Image (cartoon, rainbow, N blue to C red; front, top):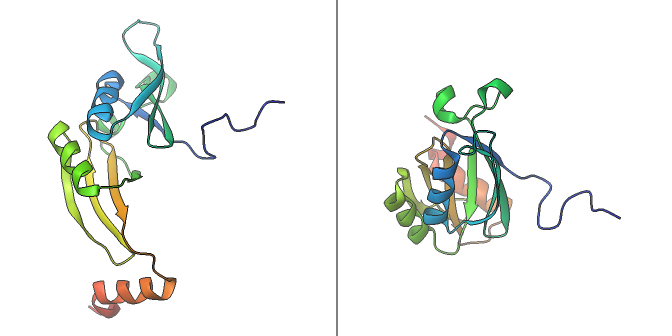
Length: 156
C-alpha cells in the first residue's frame, strides 16, 4: 500500500517559485544548511522544473518561474504575502549566516512575548523568512498578557 503522504514529507510542504531557482538552492544551502535531495532540469536544460531541498526535518519544493503556466516568483509579481517560518537551535547564528550569504535583515532577532527569540529577513529571491528559537513555554494567558504589555495594553 502506498502512503498518501510520501515518506519524509508533512501534510503541508512549501513549494517556492523563484526567478533563479538554481542560485536560490545554492543560497539555501549556504544560509540555512539545506540539503538538496532532487533536481529535475527544465526543457531548456538550464532551468529547474522541480527540485526538493530539506532544511532540518522539512522538505521544500522549488521551481523556476514558468509564466506560461502561471508560475511567477516574488520578484516578478512585486513581493509576497507569505512568510516561511524556520525554527532553529541558534537563531542568532543562523540569522547572521543568512545575512552574510546575501539575505536582507528586516528585523534582527529579539525576545518576543510568545516565547521565541525571533527575527525576520528577505532572501535575495524575494521570499520572506522568519527565524526563531523557542526559549520559553508559555500558557495562552501568559502570551496574552505579554502581547498586551508589548502593544501598550491595547491602547493607543
